Length: 79
Image (cartoon, rainbow, N blue to C red; front, side, top):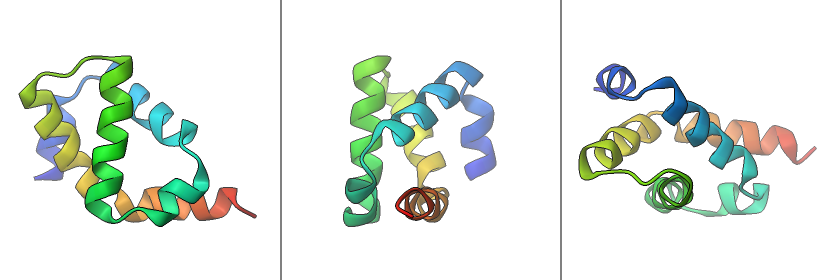
């Protein structure tokens, strides 16, 4: 499922997605539930680059498989 989402997203969207993650305060990334984290990142990404319904689904599917990685990266930033 996650590999399909990645195939459907272009490299510009992936860069913008990870930039949105990096621009989010560490405390927010660590505090939000998985679904809230996904919604937060999608909202930030959508503000930078408007997404259609299919793109939002692809990004959501991709992020579902990356929430642990996002939290690990946020945790490492807090040290």
